[in-house]
Image (cartoon, rainbow, N blue to C red; front, side, top):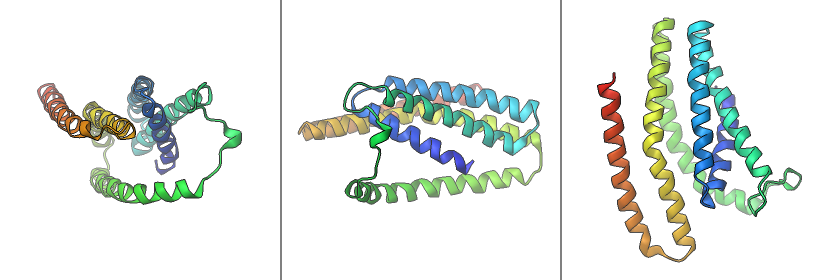
Length: 199
């Protein structure tokens, strides 16, 4: 499962590049494709093949790799400044330092969230039941769809905010924050209610 982090990082960086130029549709399509693949592979590996926890990991890594390959394929074939030319790919130490300055605190925050999930997952695995593990995997996938449904607004907020700061229109940032905050809250309430009622 940890090996899949490479694919996850590749997708996140690539989709951030696409979103920075206003292309929010293709990263969304890639997530939808990846999500469908994840669900189908979970059903196959956990229920049919009885791979239990390994099946969930294989399904997750495979679906993340598909989304990473799709976003890289798009970037390699772009015709504008976002085109990725692998022959010229190298580290810029100044940029790496700036990324680390921002990324390490964000990474630590995400790590705390991930570690709490590991604790929950290890508790579930301690039951030593394929049915419980499969049920948890299904529940986690539903939770991920709800999470993606309202974090899409967060991603839009990042894009709009950076575009407006870049354009020198900092006066719009507060309005963006308020409107997307309301959209996030509304989406979370609606999607959580649907999941609860359809449980």
